[in-house]
Image (cartoon, rainbow, N blue to C red):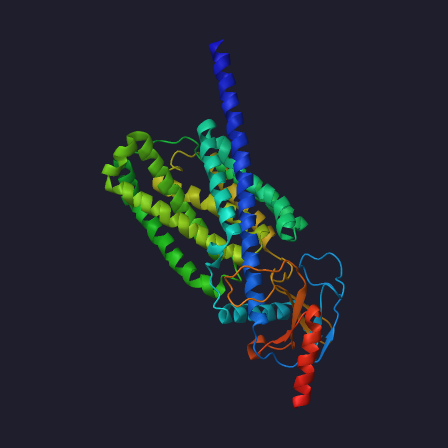
Length: 446
């Protein structure tokens, strides 16, 4: 009778743990998409501010409506002349999508420099802070879940974040989700499950002495040196090539995440064994410092990745790289692989391979997607760069006063972006009267 009662209690606790973990991970997915949305809005504001404050835009030729599709910008049908307008300029036919992407990169760089774009501008966004708050709440849910159910049950439920993102990213951000992305997510989920289940689920509480031994052992020192070199290299590459390779910023997130997990595990062990007496040991302060610093750096580089890539790419890739980094780090410091059988090790390696195959499917052969705040299109005679219209303001930190979302356009000749001195700015249709008057004045003055 008592045995049945105990089994019922275990089953109920496991159910509660699973429920809390699923809700927590779904909340994390919402949080990451809110942060991405905040980045998109900030970049739109910076562009609208820059182009609306050009003192003497070059002369344009004529205003025409553009009713074509823009590549992968969330519109499923041609826009009317009310929704968009362009200025045409004589130019040769663009040679490829890559050329259009190069022009976009040039414009984004120019706007960023001219507006003194701040990569930490998102810290002023209420929407971003809402995302961070929900993310913390989701992580707290995961922490609570580990108190109700075994780690071997809770850990694989982190894949809920990936599944949730399949639904949320297209709905919240209008991002394109391909069939191969779905296959990639399924492989990433399956691989993550195999990796977690093949690792040791038993946790041994570590004393201060055991933690010091783990940190100072030879293999740990080698691990610190190698990851330190990787951090330096990736940090240097981030501002240079971070926008072209998602692995750079997310590589940093994964390495820092591994350190966060290692320090969290040690701090939790000290709390369970000594509680407040842990502060009598100097190693406790080192561990807490590592935990806080690496957690902050994780947020920094995760948001850099969200600024540069779609959440449909970032979230699955981050999940896989973080999981592998945390398990490898724990194996090095705490010898999690020492008691692994050959069968367990084989399953672990297979799981890693399946995960990386899933990431490859998600991140490779993606269509040439325009920046959310900047869309490029072209016909036989011009290249049009479309940007959302906001009410002009003098300070990029000021809130927008207008809620309408028409589209203004910037037209560039299709040439090497490095040779462009100044863009041609076209006012939106609603301002066409003023634009034509300015144009006539310029012609009469000549």
